[in-house]
Image 1 (cartoon, rainbow, N blue to C red):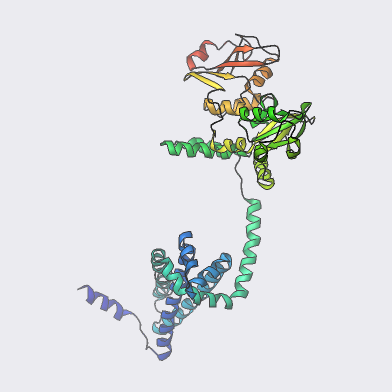
Image 2 (cartoon, rainbow, N blue to C red):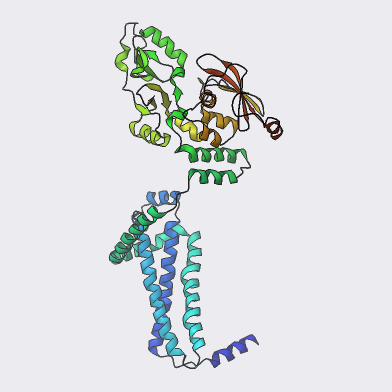
Length: 454
């Protein structure tokens, strides 16, 4: 029944006589469809090879497989060759299909039929036979297809070099313009995007923390992560060798600054590994000859730039200097990396020395804790602190910035939903601070309290 209806429809078409020229055109069109399929399959097969596949190909002595590596040395040129060849083949298919349909059918009486055959059917034929089916097959057999087609594509690349060179050159100009015009989201936008994600597993939570560290990485100054000069283990230049060895064992560091008279006058950096062959020397040994030149960085340097300099100079420690040229402290490669991956501890690190957690809303911190570490412990962004901190970079400095003086013991300072209680201080600094995160009810009760001393 269905077959008879199809025959009736076909018989209604205004067929004309099939000549030898039409027959040749049909055969040529079939050949071009095969070429289109092969070229489309090659595009997927070449660019879906994994590093493991490429390693396997490199270890092979097969000539066709070696041609794959040669083609992938210049992927832009390869892609340009494939696109140009596919375009030429598809144009040929369209021209031949138009020729064939015009010789087989009389479209003067039925222009709709001409549109269906010349546009719809030919387009579907090219998409199905020349694009979709070969690409699906090539996805599952990438090495096989790439090996078969590598030599033909290599030959085709040589013939189409003038065309592909023009395409690659023009695309490089467009790439440069796009890079200049593309939108770069702000740190706030990226941070907000991370806030919208909620990690469900511990592993995801760690990845989330690393991403947050990367977002903030380029916006962090050296001053925010450095170790203050008052906390730096450093040796005086005239220390005798035996005393030096004892101090080294107590410090647990592999690189130590050495100063003359005071910390502002750094004589060099002592690498402990340089001392290994001199442990048997007496106390008169001139260990000062082993000092290496110090590497200085300003407080305002961004830590992403510092990381590049550490990599270029193969250095792990830098002396941080303030605007007056005085030594403000030191910063290490470990300090920089901790901003991305979190705290890195070793056998010499003293844990829980910087702060203690009393409960979920109460913490006790040393006044010298950097604000950036305070944010990490409290699990906050710290935007309000950053806006109000002025030139301060530690919790003690922040409180002094807010009050204009050094508060005494038991005095309280309120900021946003945080209450700071001074637990210990002297005439020169704030030593220890209790930080309380106020709940909504507590904030309402203290609504009349200003952000300064209570």
